[in-house]
Image (cartoon, helix red, strand yellow):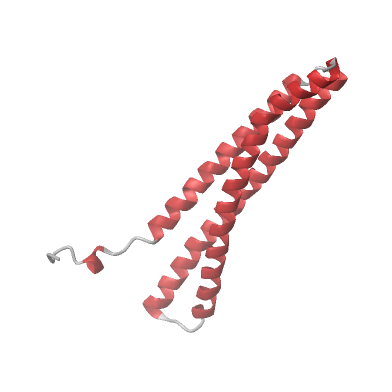
Length: 152
């Protein structure tokens, strides 16, 4: 193995960690996309019912639509951060290879792009947490329907 092959192998090894992060980001994006699809389907059903309701039922639909709108926004924001993080991971890998072959001192920049990618990933996860908390809060079953006063 010559010197160039050794550099290539070493650079590939260095780029594996960012690539594994990229795989994890893809899995999270898949989860968020599925959740977004379900929320959009529910919003469409509520929009159809909106005009045909009034009173308390209408108020409940409007409340649910507001919650769904907030969830859509959170999921969209999280997906934006994940896509941006993925792009930063790609830039990190490119910088690692450029550093290895051009010897122009890009390691600090590569470290910066990787740190930015991880920060974006963490931000997206916080948004995902907020969305799931919002969803579970909206789906609480009223205690009166659970009939806790009865022994079953």
